[in-house]
Amino acid sequence: MPRLMILIASTRPGRVGLPVAQWLEDRARTHGGFEVDVADLAEINLPMMDEPNHPRLRRYVHQHTKDWSVRVEAADAFAFVVPEYNHGYTGPLKNAIDYLNHEWQYKPVGFVSYGGVAAGTRAVAMLKPVVAVLKMTPVAEGISIPFVAQFLDERRRLKPNDVMEQAATAMLDELVRWEAALRPLRPSLTPSG
Image (tube, rainbow, N blue to C red; front, side, top):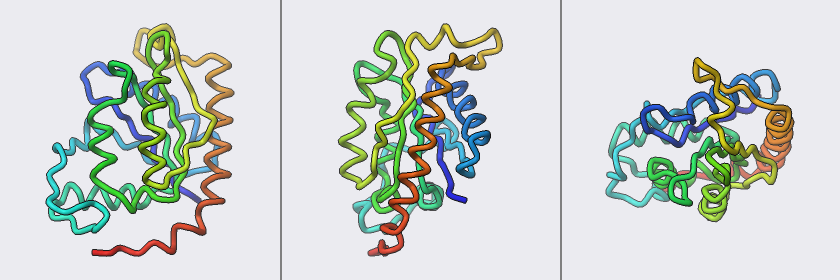
């Protein structure tokens, strides 16, 4: 079964990304199209890019990079859970993306964005050209959660509405389709370092 990595892009204390990702994890497991791996950038805690070699060479010198490489390589598809900070996406997400190159290639990515009135959609708009240059395929279906605080209960669990549930199903279905379509392209990749 293919593996979906749900990547939590926010690292700030009290972040909403954690309950959003927990809801998505439950939905993905219920969906049944993937094994699920939740990668929390707050726990992974990658330092600011500290590798001396370009990531395309795959000559990593730090264990944290080697561990991150193995984890991303094992994923067949991604769902990035992203807030919007100042009309953009988070620094920790950009850093995590930039650590690697080949490991991202020919894999689909869906976006689960959240925030205020714009629901994080400006962050997603900025992310799409970044993932495209890494040869990832952003799926059109995604989940956008406006005024996200209204969907949190007293225990800070996300209580989705029908629109969010339907969007999750559509995104997961597309990730399954695109993962299968892109899978034949991945074995041709060979490390150059």
